[in-house]
Length: 211
Length: 211
DNA sequence: GAGGCTATCAAACGCTTGTTTGAAAGTAAA
DNA sequence: TTTACTTTCAAACAAGCGTTTGATAGCCTC
Image (cartoon, rainbow over all chains, first blue to last red; front, side, top):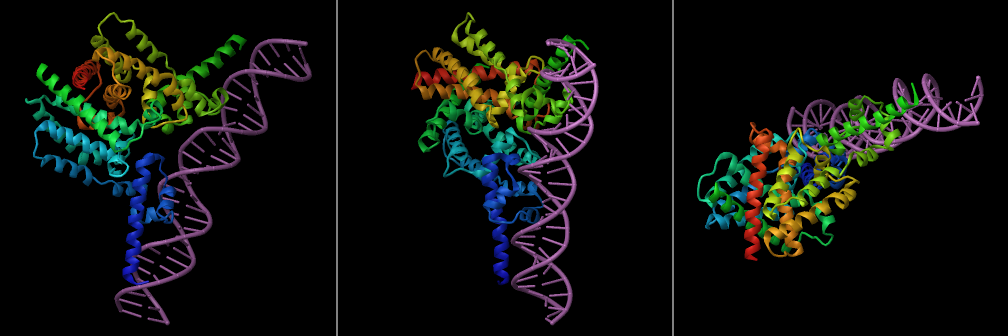
């Protein structure tokens, strides 16, 4: 084995662990996920997690990655369209990130899980991902409303949209039982996103024009 | 010790365990909650849970109680008001159940937690509580819309409302960090409920009149 | 008062968890 | 060849979990 190969193997092990960790964390949540399961999927030894990441917490920190969410924001911000259309596009892309088996961002799914069941990484997640997201969405919704909203009002508008979106991911076990035929295929996700967008845009415009 | 006192003590222990279990389950979730912590709060021996309920699962089954949710529906159904006002009232009462420290129904909070992190009791919860709730809300929203909605559309309307409501409960750790001043006092809960109601009624009417 | 039943208790059991250990194998530098 | 360093591995460790056990004491029935 040459040095390059060894390096390669080491890097490969590290990388395989991160990939496996994203799978398991996003599916089972941080607490329910076990180091043994992750190592099994990564075909690595149990001690590898502690050797490469210092522990389960360290692995989570490495598995987290805000790039997909930031990319979504970036794409949306540079969209040449009116606020309403950009809001629709945002919800559409966000839902595909959360639900689409093919395009899904496991990193975002891990974050979505963290919201309901916090870990020590929550502070970092809020600071680096959720707070900027709230800020961006808040300004976008301000444009939709056509007038500056109060801080609290703006936060509630954002919460209304995020709450709807996350419900489909975090309450999937329930929704599955309510409608056994439910499958999150491309068509269904588009329908859900369209519903949330139409529902929310009406809500924003109405509330903004009333208060 | 007389028989009555013994009976009483036994019943007291059982009852204290259920009360303590509701507290701990609603605060920490079923999985994170420990039998030892519950017994400690109930001032009971560790073996008491198994003796009285056959295990942690059995204690959860007894701690669950759908009466408060059913009562909310019953109250709302017999309300002498138009569909819009009944929807507002429903959201108002539901949010107080989920958030108000004084009026809160711990049983409902346990259920809210179960949505995100299912246990073996989820089937029972869906069957006995959530499905009827969805059905009732669906019909109510139908009246609001003024026309019969399709099954999928109706389900999405209900999901939009429940998603918004549950977000404030299940994502509290995040919202707390976004706004450190946030306190779920009576006034704040009323404001949140009013927002969700106004937001959602506008969404329903708009979507219903368009499609 | 003997036997049976109920309820409680301290202690221990068996299992799973994340983590640590010490040896082994390989490469690179001296 | 020796030395040092990196990576992997099987095994064990310590802690926490839900659960079980066997003893104890009180009350009822006979």
